[in-house]
Image (cartoon, rainbow, N blue to C red; front, top):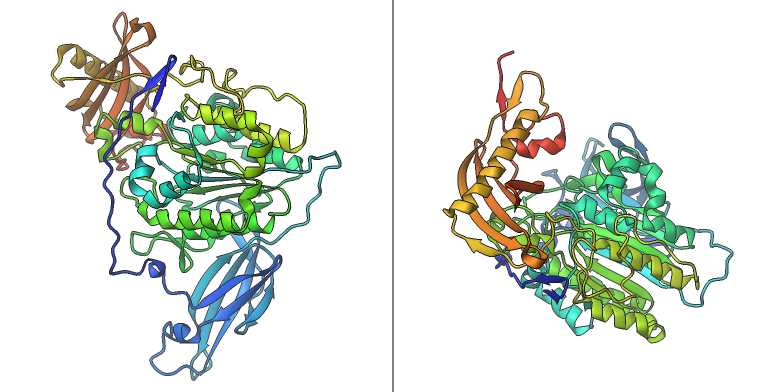
Length: 581
C-alpha cells in the first residue's frame, strides 16, 4: 500500500464475501412500488404524475372506492425539543401532471380514498427531496473568473479492499476516468467522529471535546463548510440512516440547520427498515434518496458555487450490510454528474472514515490494516488540471504517501483560496502541525508521529505472527486482561449494579512488530473475554514490562451487556451484574 522511508504498509487484503443479489425481488420495489412520480421542472418548480393503475393496487377497500385524491405538503420547519418535531404546510390537493411550486426542499405526498359513506382512508404515502434554489449574498471582494466547487460523498466503513471487492462497477468507472486514489489514506482515530471532524475542522478530538461538547451549534463556524459559505458558496449536508449516524449526533448534534440545505428533517419523516434489507425513506431506499438529492443540489447550483457533504451509512455500516447494492447507484450518480457538466469545475471526493471495525472479519490479522486504511478517491476537474500542473503533479505523487484527514482539510482550504485568487497563508491544521495540503508533495520520510497518528492506530509496519501459545505473547495477553480488570473496577455504574471482572476465554491471534530502528517491540493481540464473549484487540508495548498502548478496540458485535455503565463509552468494557443493595 505504502512503501516510503518513513512508512511501510504492506498489502493486506481481507477476502470479503461478495453477496449475491436476490433476483426474485425487484430492488426498485423493496420499499414499495411508487405510484406518484415527481421530477424537477424548474429551479423552484416540480411536476407530479400519478399512475392511477398502480395507485388502485393500494386500495384497502374490497369494494370499488367512490373517489381517490392525492395531496402534497411541505416540511416548512423543524422544532427541536427532546426530539425534533416537523412542521408541515397544509396538504394541497393536486391532479396528474400538475406543476407545483416548491416551498421547501422536502415534499410529503398522501393519497386517500373515500368509501361509500364518505369516510377518507389514507392508502398511499411517499416523500421526495429536491433542492429549492435560494437567493444568497455573495461577498464583494474580487473573485477569480473560475471558482471550483466541492462535492464530498462519504460511505461508512469502506476500506480500499472492501470497495474493490464489493463495488467493481464503481471501481471500473474511477479507473476509466483517471480518478486519483490515495492508497496511503490513514485514519487518525477509532470511529467516524474523530476522522470526519479532522477532515472538516482540522482539529483532534481533545480540542473538539473542549470546544464543542453539547454545543455543536456554537462550533459550526469551525467546520470547513462555514468557511466556504463565507466565501460565497451555497452549502449542503446530508446523512442517511439516522439510527446509525454517529458523527453529528448525541452530544454533537445540531439544533439549528448547519448548512443552507440540510437533509435531517427529510429522514425524520419516514426512515424505516421493512424487510431487514433496504433502509427506506418513502418508496425509495434512503441511500438512493441521498444520491438523488446530492445530484439535484449540484445541478441546481452548477452555475454558482457550492460545497456539499453527503454521507451514506446503510449500505456498508457492518459486514452484514451490502455495499453491492450501492455499486450501480453510485456508478450512475457519477455518470450523471459527468453528463451534466458538473465535474468540469468541481472537485469530487469519494471517501470513507475507516474500514470495518467489528465482526467476523476482524479476527483475521489482515483486518488490522483494513480497519485503519479507508478508501479515498478524488476527481480533479479538467479546468484545474490545465491551470495548476504543479498541484496536480503533487497530488499524483501523494497517492502513494501516508496521508490523513488533516491533509485533506488543508487541501479544501487551498481549493477555497485558489477560487478566491487569495495569496493568504492558512495555518497548519491544529490537530497536526506537520500536515499540509495535498497540493504540496508529502515528505517521503513522514512517519505516523509526523502525521499525528497515535501508535495505537499506526499501521506503518509489518505484522509478524506468533503462535497463540507463545509464552512471551501470552504475557502481553495477560497484561491486557489485567488492564481490563482494572477498568472494570473503576467504571461507574447504576445503583445495585457493577461490572463483572473479566477473565480470558480464548486467544484469537498474536502478532508483533518493531518500531523504527527496532528499538521497541509491540504486540497486537486479539482475545475473547468471559463473561459476555466479547472480543477485543489491543496493542501492548514491551519495555520494562508490558504496557497497553491507546484504547482497546471492541471488535465483536455489541450485545448491550454494559447498559448499567453510566458513561456510554464504558459500556463496551463492562458486563453488568446485579449486586445486593
